[in-house]
Image (cartoon, rainbow, N blue to C red):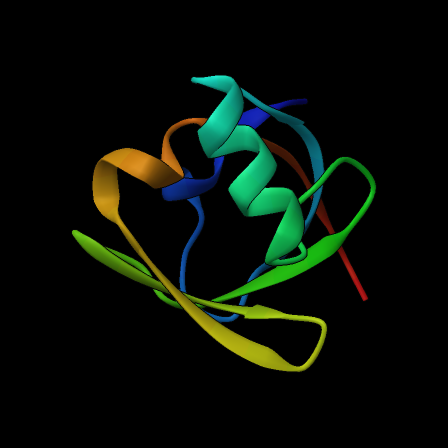
Length: 75
């Protein structure tokens, strides 16, 4: 089941399935490590979403998280 990243709660892990939006935006997220197949953990949900991406913390605004479709995973 695919859901927008902003639907996950703190501590949840997910695998990125799709990033939508302008090509520049999609490319920038890929440079930061958010691309299809990567795993992310939500550290802090909300209007300013804090993520763990490959051991690094990344902060995104709430609307941006809705453009990242993920599949929740259990570790």
